[in-house]
View 1 (cartoon, helix red, strand yellow):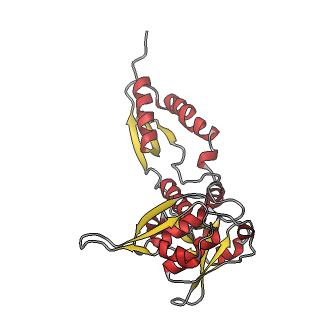
View 2: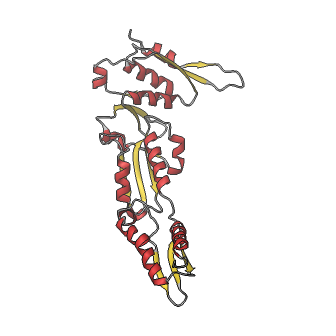
View 3: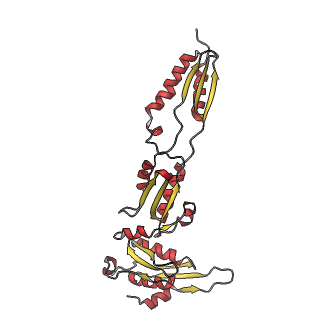
Amino acid sequence: MRFTVAVLAVALLGCLRPAAAQEEQVTITITKDMPLADFIDGAAVTVGKPILYDPGGQRFQKNQTMGVDVTKNVPKGKELDLIRAILAFYEITLIPVGPQGYDVFLAIDSRSTNNLVKNKALFVPWESLREYADRDGLYLMTSVPVKHIENLTMLRTALSTMVTPAGIGRVHEVPGANRIILMDYAPTVAAMARVIQEMDVDPKPIVTATILLKHAEAIALANTLKELFVAADQQQAAPRGQGAYMAVAPAPRIAAYEPGNAIVVVAAEDDLARIREVVKQLDVPPTE
């Protein structure tokens, strides 16, 4: 059964008259045999703006129907978010075009018109991305500052595995500004920004300590500690070198101070704690 635009508009615009303490609701009704084109026509009436589409497009030529019976109440003002999310399931993206206040929407197949989707991305400051994390079907872009991650190229490579395929999602690094530019649908952009924040942490501070020895000889123990901590760290140099995603603490530096029979250590706090523990175990009276 093919719904007329007028009948669908009534279904979509069925606002409930709330009590004084209730929020005004908009009822959106979908039926299995409702043509996708009819849903878009009714959605235009609901949001109060024209939604243009190509009736000769592949999805409309196949007379695709919605395929499900749904009745959903949403707070007034949120109906566009729900309509956009529903259309995203059918791989249709709503793109605003035209001057502000007089804009209209284009309903386009996101798989075949990627350039138009990206050119009309909505810019959202990265601090506000949490508010958009559930906005399915909304294509946006943001710029995320990076403070501690050293290799932005490798960070981009890692994030690129998360983007929407077929060239829709994009990640670009800007080394001079220490920023990563993200372009994709809102939930994906929000997720990538959270990953950056989780990884972009300040490395542990470096401290200097002098460990006085009671029994062990400083030079011999210093050489042993270098074998245990410095040589092992150099064998795993990739995470600490230019290939690292993140800034990490350098390898410990260990030296013997012969006049005071002491070990001087420059290292991150957790490395220093491990070195102290080894010194404690080795700085013992010689056995007879």
